[in-house]
Length: 139
Image 1 (cartoon, one colour):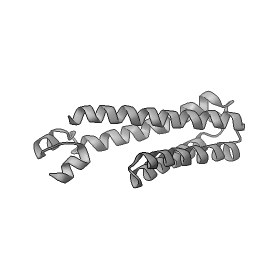
Image 2 (cartoon, one colour):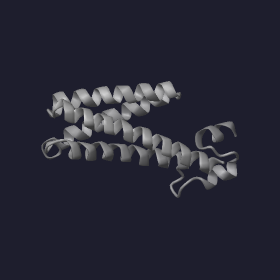
Image 3 (tube, helix red, strand yellow):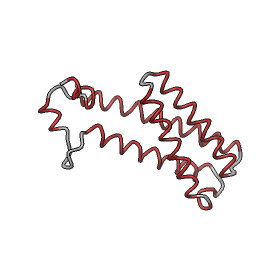
């Protein structure tokens, strides 16, 4: 019972089973995959908005940067599930995306700052929204 509550916020086995989808995945894992995909897409969209055509000449490089930054944020935030861990994950994500955009994609520093800042802002907003929604579902 304790494991069920920790993983999905459910209090008993019946509510845990009802929170699973047709593939048998708990609600928590579905939402994590959706959040991961949203963060990847958000990074690409932000690069296409704030850069001068970088998205058309470096699609796979942008995807690699988005994947690395999103995985890094997820791993650091999971390893340190506190506010300090989330702040550290955001700072690391911003620094790595800033460096990668500037040196690998060759966007200007000003554009890279806008992209990194907007991405971290999106990640913070998404995390707050998801925590509020998941808290409302579990109560």
